[in-house]
Length: 270
Ligand code: ADE
Image (cartoon, rainbow, N blue to C red; front, side):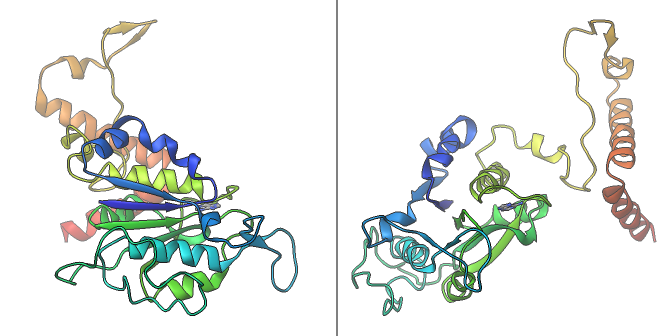
């Protein structure tokens, strides 16, 4: 899977070089590139923002540096649209900073462009599962009050555009949301996690229930004990206990998920 990350703070993504995602990059399972929109400005101050049309607080990210950065991504990927971009407004040379030629088959899918924004579609485990099957993801993180809306409109000519929110709260910029989404998506890419069975039993996986509680040695710890059933060796009983715990946790902690689960169960039993 190829991932391109656009941000005026590309160092923000250094965390993705650690642990499992870092290893997956070294192993060639993931290619993660960082792109600085300031590299596509022409003025001395490398300006990427300007005041909002119609007035109001803050600044808006200008469309041209982001569009040129996205064109650079298209030029360096083999997908359809590369080399066919109308640069009449962009000032970018016709050859562009190309790193690879067009695809041989020409049948590659369009890259997905994810624009993190609190006004986007909610990013869920289902979305992560769906996006983990794609070959090429591009994330464009905005700062300030966001990116000029026309980038979203223009980009639909070349990408499958998905404005996405990671939750109902506001961050200072899209970078933290990008890290969350990239981690949730890439851990589902085959080979990134050593033991793929662990993915099936997690919260939000499969039927959507929350995870059961886990314990390890010692059996007694500061006056707290591991539930006896887990030490019984009876796998049937252990599975039943874990299921019960999942249901208890979900009913208590996430009544919204519980309500959906009950409806789905009823539908299945009909
Ligand atoms: N940018 C700012 N807040 C955000 C959120 N909740 N989700 C995605 N991107 C954001």
